[in-house]
Length: 293
Picture 1 (cartoon, rainbow, N blue to C red):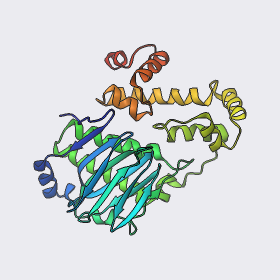
Picture 2 (cartoon, rainbow, N blue to C red):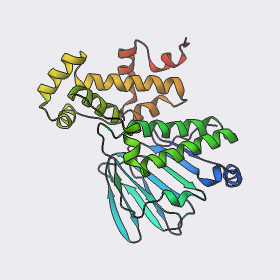
Picture 3 (cartoon, helix red, strand yellow):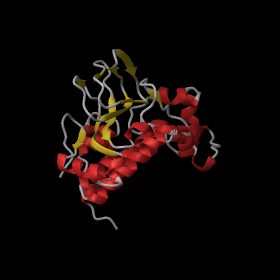
C-alpha cells in the first residue's frame, strides 16, 4: 500500500469502502474518522465543484499561495496560513488561484461527533506564524496521520490516526489553549524569535527581506546580528533547518525525493538534492540507505 502521487510532490490517500464501513462500526473510530486525506503543493489548476454535494465534511488548510471557495452562493478568498471547513451535504466549489496556486493539507471526514468541530461561520480562519503559533506541531500531527494510514489499515492504525486527527482539530478549535501549553511564557530575544519563525515556515520559500520584515530590522542589521550568534546567515540557517527536516523524513517515512523536496519549499528536486549533498556529504538516496546506529 502506498500513498498515491499525482502532480509533482502530491500525496493523497483514499480509504477503501470496506475500511470506512469498519470504522463506522468501531466504537472509537465511528466518533470521528477520516475518509480521504492529502497534501497538494502548488496545486495549479486544482478545482472541485460538487452539486450534488458529498456526505463528508471537508477541511482545507492553506499554508502557501491563494485560492477560494464558494458555499451558499457566497465566495470566500483564501490566503496562506488560513483554513476553512465545508460541511457535509452542502453544494460547494473551491479552486487554487491560477497566478499563485495554493499549497494545502486537506481531509474529508465523517463521524457521529464530526459536527462539533465545524465552526458557526464558514469564513476562513487565520493561524499566522509567531512565537506561540505552533504551526510546525500541527504539520507533524498531519504527517503522522498520513504515515500511519500509509503503513497499514489495521484497526490499531485506524484508531491511532483518527485519534491524532481528533487532536489536530481540537488544536484549531481551542487555538489559544493549544498555542501556550501549560501556560508557558515565551521570553525570546530577536534571534531566538527569528529561528522560531523559520521553523514555523519550514515548508515555505522565504527571502531575507521576508525574515527581516518579521524581525523588524533591516536585512543587513539582522544578518549581522544573526551570524554573530549562530555563525550563519538567516537564509543559510533556514536551509540547514530544511535539511534537518529532510533527514527526519528520509528516516521515518517512505516519501519520495520529489515529495520531500516540494514539502520543504524546493520546486527543483535536483537543486534540493545538490543542497542536501553539500550539507550532509552524501545524496538523499545514500543517506536513506545508510545503516543507522
